[in-house]
Image 1 (cartoon, helix red, strand yellow):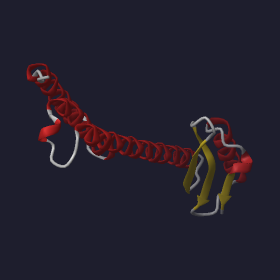
Image 2: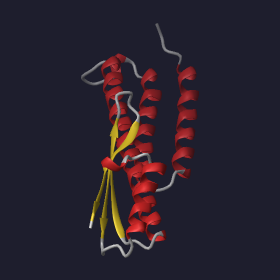
Image 3: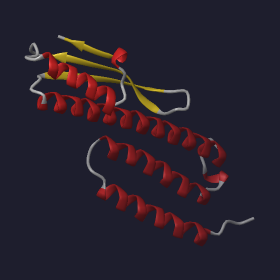
Length: 161
């Protein structure tokens, strides 16, 4: 059975163009690195149908597909870690911004976790006061804001003075 290269070449060119366009518009940083890894896997999968088992040194196309699948899973795992990190930084920034609005000088630390169904939630929030808070009402307001807006109960909040 011979392989029809014309049916393989058009999707390969289309994949190359799509990957190039997406990477060109992505902002620099972690997301672009993850996008590049996923794009590499996409290109690899697009190239594989055109490779015959006779032209692959030391292996079969199925082995290469399995290896590419593993790399794709690794890239997805890295993307998940990057997303969790970005969400964590965003929430810490929100807490610090709210504290500034209450005239508090704090550093926030959020500890995200996954529940049994795989959803992210804030396991714990630690707020460290860089200088002693002026009014206790501001601290109480911040604690209540974290409880009501971010959904972290008071027993999972630590406030270090």
